[in-house]
Structure formats: structure tokens, C-alpha cells
Image (cartoon, rainbow, N blue to C red; front, side, top):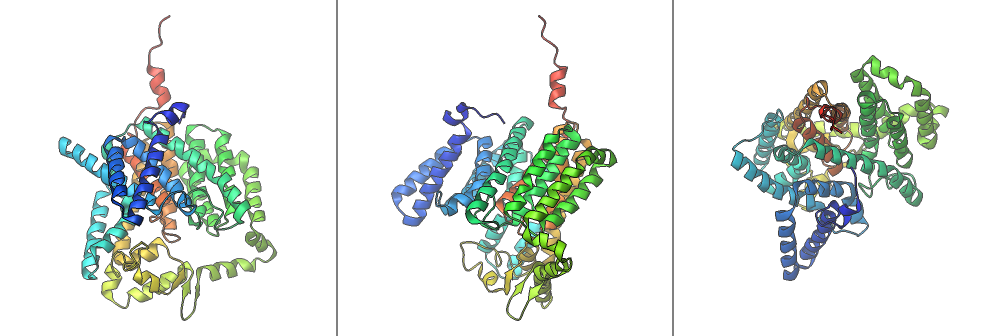
Length: 475
């Protein structure tokens, strides 16, 4: 995406909307803290001005700014807590705008995700009734799980052009790039570990094991299908420095699984393209092991691998459970005591972290120290039937991405589809590793990719081909 000084000084530019959003979020924060009618009037006026005259495209840029920077800036005290609700506010506005479009055209775009999404929503409602839960708990849980899923339906109805999505992807590539130097600077300040992550959060490195793998998938997609430019491989190698700042134990596993899946999907011919760079990959991998004291110690004592993997994934005593495998066992033993809980869980919202202390009470008393994952939280809230319905939706996205990949004519979209298909598989694995769909950044990336494969015509001609077909101007 090309940025110029006009984007900064022009009131219709991206910077204007970001600054406007910061100001609006600050005023709303003051309103909530002080309850001052003056702040109420100003917040109402600015919100109306922002929403009524705003462009849907610029709103998407503001959402991207929020998911990449809001948490970190909030902890630094630059923006108030309420700024994190900005995507929700824009969501309400876009819902009304799209409702008007559907009302005028009398046409609702259907997708193959509709059935599992509807069934999951129905099951969530039934779980609330069976467990005598509250609508607030259901709302808070669905807000975290499917907020960006609603954006998916809104964006496909707005029918934005492919050239706009190309610019958005260009912006995302830049934002991904700056995560590495940011993480390295934070490592120098705070030390290697959970604090040394990029701009998307202040603490917590769950996504640090996932983002480098996404970069690998998309980068290899461009290398395989668009052009064999070594700079794509250099970008992938550069991004592995993220692991130096915030080493995560699951990253090597995710990287290896997705890499071999990439090779399987690409085929032997594509595999041969990267063979000349095999020595570079070996050097990068060796460097990662060397910079991680924990992984480096495995060479001295291979038995530590077994000890490390078992103690990390399975730790428990009489009072608290730690580790993802032990948590799965604890949840199963808890749910099987009651067939109702096995099917419906304890009700939506009971395990959801939020400002509402009543809704999060069960989570606070549940004997788990660490090991909360999407699978754990969803099982306790919706039961195993709810988990199956949600995963059915994700698997459908996985299948649709393959169809788009096979039909895509433009190398650019083919590359994106290839990387996104591998990303969806990564999300299925990460479902049992972290709260992958409750984190704004990962949830946004998942649903934005779904927008691409449902909005872009896979048979759309490459941009280069369109220019080539235009007749030359006569002299």
C-alpha cells in the first residue's frame, strides 16, 4: 500500500480515523469514570460524527489498528480501557449499514458456514436455558468468540473490491514486519520471555508460537505461486527472530507440522524450489536452538525432552491442575459426572473473563492454575456438543479454502489462499493450545481470511493480465 503525506493531512485519510478513534475512546472512558453529562454530550456528538460520515473501508483500518496496538497502548496508559470496545462500536454501526443494504436489495448472501454457525448459536441459547444462565453471560461469551465472525458476514455484504483487500493485506504485511524489531527492543528492556512480544499485547506470548508459522505459510505461498523471489524466504527467516525474543515450547511443533503440510499441499515440483536454501534453513534452526537455553540443553541431556514435555503438559496435585493435558483430563472428569454438563456445559459466560465478576465466578474458583485453552473454556461453557459444532464451522472454512486455492487464477490470491489454508489447520491445532478465537488479533486474522475466500472471485484475472489486454495507445 502506498502512503503519502496526503494520507496524513487529509481528513479522510487513515490517520484521521485513528486519531478520531483515540479521542472518542478517551471521552467515552472519561464518561464511564466520571459520569459527567458534558462528556456524555461530547462522546455522543463525536460518535455520531464518526459513524454517520465514516467510510466502511476506513473503519476496517481502525479495527486493524485496535487489534495490533490497543492492549499494549492501554497498559502504557496512552488509551483508556474502553478503547478496546471500539471494534464492537464499529460493529454495531456496520450492522445497521448492512441491514439497510439487505433491506434495499432484499438479498442475504448465504455461505456454507451458515448451518454450523446457526446450530452453534442455538446450542448456546439452549445451554443458557438448561443451566439457568443469564443473557448477559451468553452475550459476553459470544462477543469474544464470534465478534469478528459477525464482521465476516458484514464485509461480504459490503462487497468491497479486491484492490482494497490487496491494500489491507499490504498493511498487514508491514504490521507483521514491525513485530520483530518491537519484540527485540522489548527483550532488551524487559528480558527474554513473556514481556518481549510485539505490539499486539503487553504480556502473554501464546500468539508468539503462532504468528511466525502464519508468516511461514503465507511467505511460502508467495514463493511457490507468485514468483520465486528469495526475499520471501528472507522475510520468513527474519521473522523467526521473534522466537529469540519470546521462545515458546509449542512453536517448533507447530512449525514442523505446518511445514510438512505445506510441502504436501504444494507438491514435489514446489518442494524442489526451496532445496537450494536448505543450508540456510538449517543455520536458522540451529540458531534458534542456540539462542534458547532450554532447547540447547536437550543436546546435552536428551532425556530432558521427555521430562520437559511431560511436566509441562501434565502437572497436578490435590488443589490445582496445570498443563494442557491435565486440564483436559480434569474437564472430562468434571463434565462426565452430569450428562447435562457433558452435553451443554455449565452455561455460556461462566468461564469467560470479563468486567462482570458474577459471570466469571466459576472460572475464578475452578482448580486450574494454567492451561486454559479454547477447548477447555468452550467445553465448560457449551459442552462437548458445542465444541463439535464450532469445530465443524472451522473445518468447513478449511474445505472452502482448498476449493478457492484450486480455482484461483491470480497468483496473488492463490498465494494468500495457500497460506490461509495452512493457517486454518494451525488454528485447529491451536484450539487445544491457547484461547485462539478469544484473542482479537488471531480471531481477526481467521475471519479476515474467510472474507477473502468468500468475497474474491477465484477466477478473477491477474492484475498484470488485465493491463496486458488493454490496447496500446497509438502514437
